[in-house]
Length: 213
Image 1 (cartoon, rainbow, N blue to C red):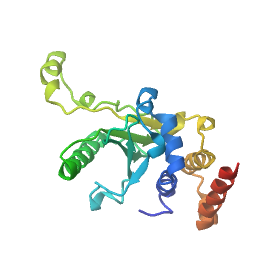
Image 2 (cartoon, rainbow, N blue to C red):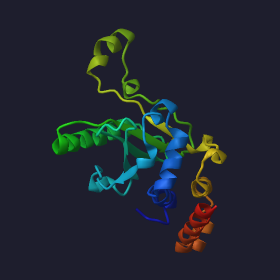
Image 3 (cartoon, helix red, strand yellow):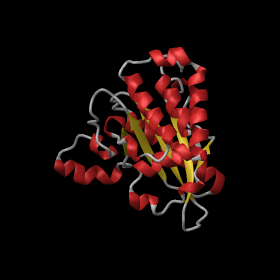
């Protein structure tokens, strides 16, 4: 993946690899009833990747594991997928990743942990693909009633950058980054080519200063 042609991919990945920024992001986005069960302070970035080599140029996948507040040994996994356009194959892609994660879990521990698929979207068009896999099937009402039990359904948690209230994010760095991504998507990348690596160093300084405050 080119850092110049796809700077938003790098910005998002670099930012969410930071624990505090990832926690801030998911606090903003995850439903309260889900957050109530999770120990978000125990969030860790998993080093495992379930994306095939030929897709890595196009995908920005991150996998997080979070312990439960109950103290149970199982973890909840958040699978993060980044889309900058309407991609009708996103559900089958995520289904493949989820299946690979469950296969890996069972191989390691002979048990399964919940995987929550999460889509970060910042495309020109409004998201019209829905949030449930079963909604992508075209059935009559009767056909849906008969066949729905055979569909491995799941629901996406969804983040649309065009609708975000940046001021509600706890992380200053995250506010800046998402604002930058918006600028990039609007076509204003001149600042990125001018600053290059110093841009990320500046963000690091910003983060350190915010921690002192």
